[in-house]
Image (cartoon, rainbow, N blue to C red; front, side, top):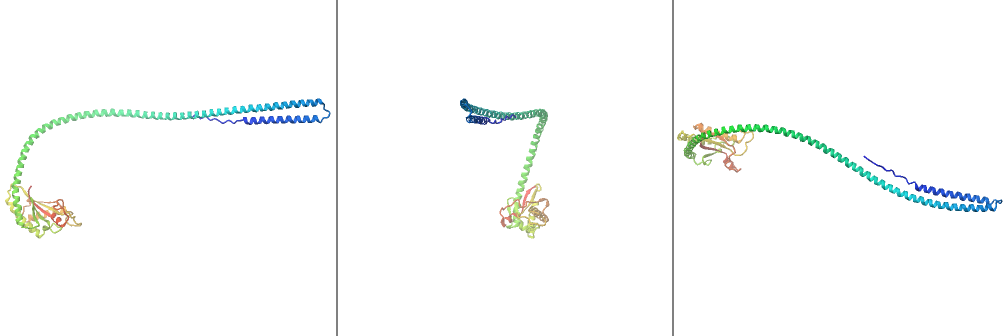
Length: 356
């Protein structure tokens, strides 16, 4: 980088003028001394003549004129020196101004060089970026070419797949037409089966009302047993001790009466009606106590109680194939409260006469 340095010059003119002035003063002093000595010597020489005095006077006059001239020359010289000094000072100021201007120009030039260097670096960076982008463009073109080739391959495969699907669709349409024929036949068979089932249910419904009526007569006016729609509900508290699935003595008596009613209806219901009695066990939502032997939760307890009821009915002569036990735990409460009465209502055995 260009860097111009200017040295400051020392001004010698003031010292030169002072030296010249001192030399002139010394010369004048020496002339005065010389004249004084020469005059004194000739005055005290009694043998000197008037001509010598006259010559001395001429010499003194000449010396005086020379001194005046020298003084005038000295003044003129000093004036010239001062003028020259002013000129030199003006020139030095001009030189200083020129040096300052050159320094400014040098700084501006250096700044331009720095800017050009920065621009060159940016241009090189841009060039490198363009080179990289060009390489990426070529790479992208290569990838696109590969993708085009792969897409064409996929299109060919799709065309083949479409042809296969079209063939499969044609076969499916033919099969669908065949299934439509089969569907009509199956619909006819299903309608007949549904009609038979409705007739069976209608026949069973006649016996359901009679069944619940006979159970109600057999059990009497017990508050722990009641009918609810198409099912008969027996409180678990009358059949089992708290937390147990062994049928109590009172529960055995209740179930003996139910068994007698069920056995009578086994003989009354026609053999073409395929019926069963569902025995559903339900509990309250109180958790099973830790360490309880025989079951781990209410779901198991409800199933064990339903099974115990089935076994007791079978023991009293009911056909086992007509009884189906199931347990629901606390999942289907009939009362949503948390009081003792609501919990007692939820602990129950439900019996329902229904078809298989």
